Length: 169
Image (cartoon, rainbow, N blue to C red; front, top):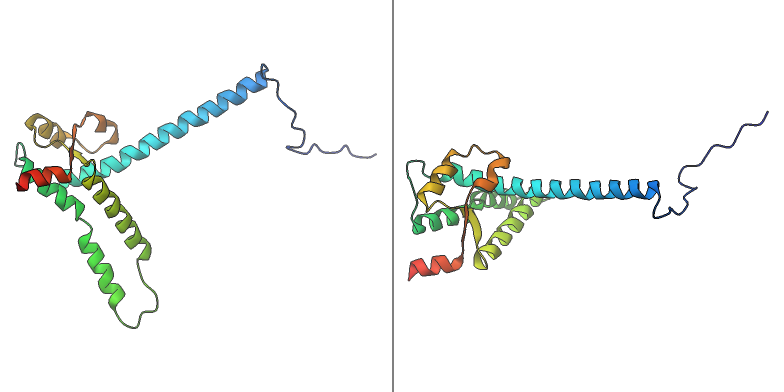
């Protein structure tokens, strides 16, 4: 007795009527995928911001109640030059004679890309940093434990090249 032909997946795609249940379920699935992707991208943005804020939390003086504008600008300049030591080490390793290939090329490229982006931000609209000038905001930032879900509660301030120019005058 001959066997029945197996149904081939994906070949019997008919046009779906716009008012059908199938169309409704497909639209629900697509909207759900969009919503999930939007939440993931927002989470990634907060992860990047959390990394920046953790750097400031580790490098700020815990004894101070509030910073002056000059001290905050100095802290931002430290943040902008945080990779200088690592870049120096990479150039030393690459300058050793007898090596055929460059090492840490991808890390060096990632660092340069990050610093170029931050320099462009600093010279144009400004880098967002925690508001350490206001004493109340500084205290709330000190109490922050590093969780990304509390990042919206932290008040941020933009520091740019114009702030540095005003301080130098």
